Amino acid sequence: MTSPSKSGARNAWLAVISGERRGPLAALARAVLTVLAGLHRAALAIRDLWFCMPGAAGRASRPVVSIGNLTVGGTGKTPMVAYLARLVGEMGGRPVILSRGYGAASGGPNEEAIELARLCPGVPHLQNPDRLGALEGWVASNPCDVAILDDGFQHRRLARNLDIVLVDALRPFGFGCVLPRGLLREPPSALRRADMVVITRAELVTPEGVSLLKQTLLAHVRPGTPVLVARHEPTGLLMADGSRQEATSLRGREVAAACGIGNPEAFRLTLENVGAQVRLFDTFPDHYAYTTGDLDRLLRTAEAAGLKSLVTTGKDIVKWQPLLTGRRSLPPVEVAALEVTLQILEGEETLRREIGALVHR
Image 1 (cartoon, rainbow, N blue to C red):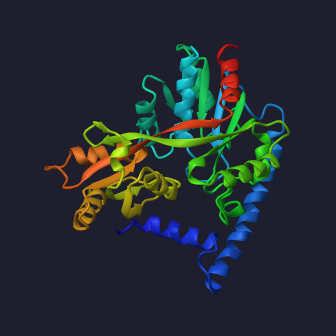
Image 2 (image 1 turned 90 degrees about the horizontal axis):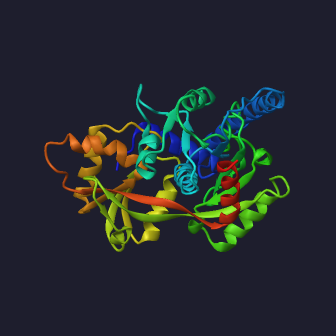
C-alpha cells in the first residue's frame, strides 16, 4: 500500500535514529540530530529549574491524577485513562477527563475524546490547552471528585496528586536518546518525578523481558515507587455499522490492516497475537486526518489482494466512520476496529488503594 508522504518521512527518520539505515549520509544525519538533542536536553534542564520554583505549578481544587509517558508515540494512555475513569466510578466517585485536545478540529473533539466517550460513556471530557482553567471552570457548577489528566507528565503547569507514567514494554526508552535523536521526550532520569510506573503491553514481550525492564525502571525511579505491569486485552471487533463481533473471529483470517497511531508495530503484533494473518499493513502519521481518497485506496488495495477484511484501531475507526457513511455503496471489504482494554497484571491493589484515597479524601 502507498503511505502518505508524512508517514514516509517519519519512517525514514525512524530508520536513521534506530541505526537501521547505514552509510555516510545516515551517520551525518545522526550527528546533526545528536547536536539538536543536546539543545533539547539543555532546554529541559532550564525547564526543570523553573518548575523547582514555588508557585510554578498551579494546584486545582480537586485531586488530579496524571497519565503520561516518556516517549513520543503510543504507550496505551487512552486505555489507561478509560480504566481509571471506570475505576473512579466503581468507587463511587465522579471523574472528569482533562486533555489538551491535540489534533482536534476547531471547536470539536479529537479522536481520543471520541474514543473515550465510547469507552467510558457519560464521563465529562474537557479539552483545553489551559487544563487548570478548564477544570476550575467545570467544578464551579458541576460535580467532580477526581480529574484524570491525559498525556500530562510533561504538562507540569498543573500540579498533580498522583503522577503515573506508562512505559511500553515493546519500545521502552525510544532508542535511548531524547528528541530528535531518539523518541524520548525526557531522559529516563525524569522518572524520579513519577509516583507510579506502569509497564504496558507486557503480552508483547517475554516474561524475562518484562522482568528485566522492571529492574531497569527501579534503578531510575525514587526508592519505593511501585512499578506495575499491564497488558492490552483484545475484547472485540467494532464493525463500521456499530455492531460487534468477538475478537476471536479474527483467528486464522487473512486481513489488511492500517492505523495512524504512535506505535503501529504494537497494533500489528496485537492482531497477530489474536490469530489474524496480516497480509497488508499500512501506517499513517499519528493524529492523521484521513480523506475519502485514503480510505478508498486502502479498500481497493485490500480487495485487489483478495482480502475480505480491513482492520484498524479504535482511535482510527472514529475518523473512518464518517467517510464510510458518505459512500454511495457499501465497501467491498468489511471494515472493523480491534477494541482493547487495559488489564493490570501486577500491582492492581496498589493502584486501587491510591485512587480510593483520592476519591474518598
